[in-house]
Image (cartoon, rainbow, N blue to C red; front, side, top):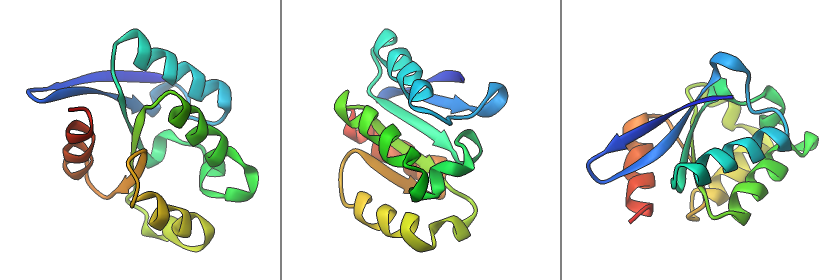
Length: 122
């Protein structure tokens, strides 16, 4: 997986880009955890296109396994979703619950995600 380190005046985060693969396994999550730790970064931005479609189907277990890895290592994750149809069903229910917490949230814009991630980094 490719990523960019984004530096703002109030913090930094890892921006995952889908140019070379998508987040599709626990192994990919571990690679991103390692990248966060290597760069002393506690927040990760994922785009809808940077995760496997299996992530949105809770029956696969991918979302749970991946989010658990990041939670164990105290890494905040923001997911940008443009296709609101993905927020239907069980995945949408999970998002409604997770958006109340401080580990994983879903947004429709990078700006809103940055505000949350960088505030969480303080």
